Image 1 (cartoon, rainbow, N blue to C red):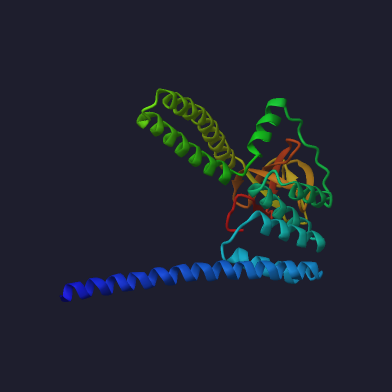
Image 2 (cartoon, one colour):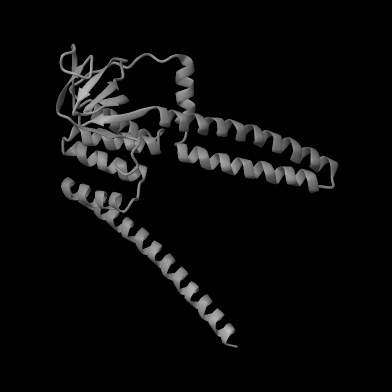
Length: 266
């Protein structure tokens, strides 16, 4: 009897804990939505500093979205803060690479930079690969891969358990087609993941900084960069960082203020 009461009490406590957890998640989501709407209202009123504060409160709660980064980019653009604006537009593009509004506003922000760096020409194969990769964000490619494999498994099970020969043929060929798309989606997801791991990009926040041929100031002064420039990080040595810019030029920066784009905590 006592054991039954203890068990029921345990179930009751676990149930209460679960309800409290769900309520906590709902309140957190509601709080984020309220902050987002307040930030939008502040932006529409022209109070961009307040909007930034509200949006960054959401980031501090470890909530990230393309819309949030996009709005932050717009706020900093209005405040004429070049590096911050470009940084958040780039973060938005990571989550929604094909969004036209994000790409257009990102271009406007880049036009505010001092450095006019020409992009290296891309081959047709590179353009095709980039176009396919940018159809969806990495997270959506992963979700699509999981969905496709489950559909393929379901169709194959239909083939196994179906008693009709015609249905078996339909299920079999459909499962093969979906499996083909699954393999393609898996390869794309893997390629994007490897590219993100191997390519470490950052936005330069230093107002002005010299680029040297060696990790010391006895080397040759190559060129000068300004805030808002997107760079690829290649190597690090103490306070020096080796970078590559869009035109393929490389060099070393000393004590550069850089914010990495693949850092999810920013």
